Image (cartoon, rainbow, N blue to C red; front, top):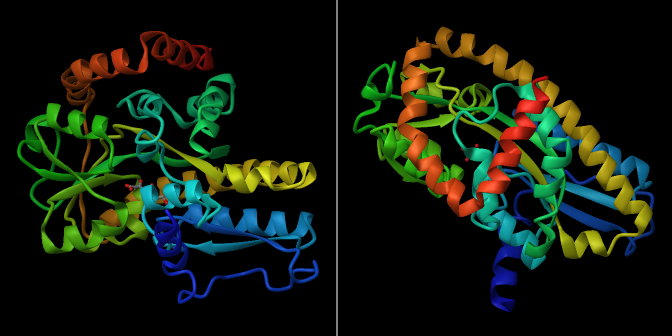
Length: 338
Ligand code: KDG
């Protein structure tokens, strides 16, 4: 364990100069440091949200807490960073819910394809009782979930052919996040999925190790996948939430006042992040086309066919997760639409 801690703790932190809040007012030695890392790059709304969190926390604690921000997987991929929180080599990360399912299996439920009908419904459910229930499952893993941020509706890209239906996905090598349900869902659609950390994705697309991937438009555009992918379709197959995670050991070591500050800052920065993210996801589909990608619309019939193909996979996972919890999620989504 000691070895791992050293390995994780040293990983890239010293070389990649952090954007530390240098003007901390607290006397040296008393400053608590939050090392916060994400997988996306510094152009992405997720990073801009993280900068807002830094600003709020440093200002409200008058420098007693310093937030160092790392983007582009400088501290590792989602899984490594989450383990870093458990081990104490890092304090904050903001992964998609998909890799969290490797720590808390119930989190697979968020990634049921076609679960959330809209961003607004997702907000209501995630910020409500249901979302809180899932955050309450994290402390058992030495993690604290402070807020839901947004990755958004995921869309398929590839460089083999335009995809209008499941039929067109046949045999396509698709990178998925490291999540069993994603893999099984893409297999059910006829694709040939392979799990991979986000940090390896661009190179894999470039080298042709995989034919395609799926992510929200903001990620596709800002990570420049249009340079290595020809086709995009609005599959909108999964609404991906982000969870703002903090190391529980670190959180427990904060004063109650500081806990309140980081909690509120994570929520406020998250509201800002969601706004930016929605603007980005609305804007970048047009930009992707302008930069040469073909766009293929998924018809209602084609989407319904995908829902039907995936249904048996969801039944299997509903059994694993617990039928009651799954039903309560469906009920919460239903109620959020009224
Ligand atoms: O910072 C978050 C990213 O690391 C990751 O969750 C992005 O959606 C993502 C993916 O496809 O891995």
